[in-house]
Structures are given as C-alpha cells and as structure tokens.
Amino acid sequence: MFCRIISRKKKTGTVPVYLNVYDLTPINGYAYWVGLGVYHSGVQVHGVEYAFGAHEHSTTGIFEVEPRKCPGFTFRKSILIGRTDFGSREVRSFIEKLATEYTGNSYNLITRNCNHFCNDLCLKLTNRPIPSWVNRLARLGFLCNCVLPAGLNETKVRHIKAEDGSNKEKRLGSNSSRFSPASKCQSVLTSRSSSSSTRKKPS
Image (cartoon, rainbow, N blue to C red; front, side, top):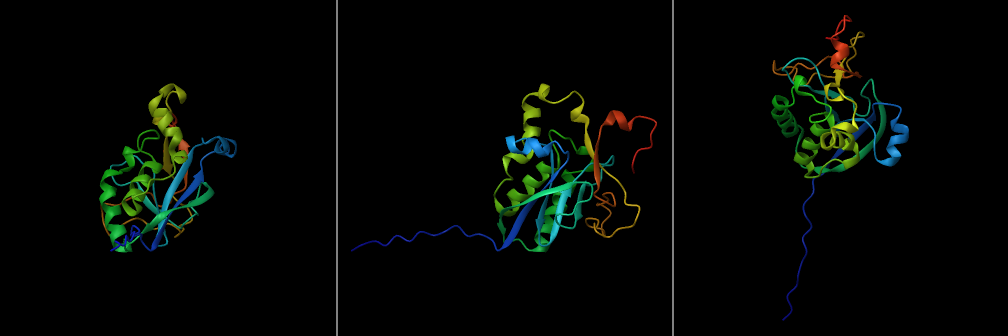
C-alpha cells in the first residue's frame, strides 16, 4: 500500500496589499540604484492608501490619501507585498489600534517613520515585511549615527494644510475625536531647528 502525500499550499488572501513608494529627494534618482535613498511609503488596501507623518500633537499621525497620489512626494513605484483576507472593516479596526501607537509627535526619521508604520501594517495583513531597501537609510543611521548628519534624527515630515479644500484626502476616523491628522498629506522635510526660527510653523 502506498501512502499518498498531498502537499497543502498555505492559504493566501484574495485582497491585494500594495506598498506605494515615493521619493523624498531627487538624489534618489541615483541612490536607488545602489540600494539607498530617502523614501516615503504608504500601504494600499481596499482602494485606500494609509500612511504616517509627523505633527506636534499627541493625536495620531496616520492619514489616508488617494492611492499613488500623496501630494508633495514623487511617486516611484508600487510593490505587491501580498494578499489578505481582512475586510475593509477589519483593516480599519487594526488601523485604529495602531493610531494610538503612531502619534504625530512620536515620529522620528530613524526609529519611527512612515516606513516603520507600513512594515507593521504589511506584517499584520500579509505576514510579509516591506522590502529592506525602502527603510535601509534609517537602519544605517540607527547602527552608525555618524553615517547621517548631526540633527537628522530631529528631522520630521510635517503636514501642510491644504488651502484649496481638496477632498483627495479623508481624515482617518473623521467621526472619532481620537483621529485628527492634518487636512492634507503634502509634506516637506524640515528640522526642529528650522521650526524654532521666527518663521511661523505649519499647523
């Protein structure tokens, strides 16, 4: 008698989960090819892109934008991380849990940036991490601080409020007072030192 061995493939989800990667600086045009660069990223699932940015308050820094169209950044590529069986409500529920952890004033370019958030979300949805090159510069800065200029740890991606009242971005959990990210995801790299100047800070 022969025993028939049937291999069972690990069940995968049906909903695609994408990592949308954006350039923060034109230098990425060269750095990308050697596995470096400074990138912003967001996770696209169920037709919504979720991302994380900085502001000066203890409310969440997680926000939503139209996929692949986060203002202020140059879209580079979309990467299929995997698939999930989480429905839109389940995804939303998990985002709400992350919201208390990823507050705007906890943003740090080296230890807690948008790519860390995306990695946590992708692991939850697909059990797969984001590609290592997306956040490599942050890891290098953590392992060897002299690699990055002094004060870069203070650098944050700050939100700028939209003046045109665009509806391209919806506030995450607009029905809940726990969520109050800026009204637009357009961001620029600024340092704490520059924000302490006489120039008015963006709200």
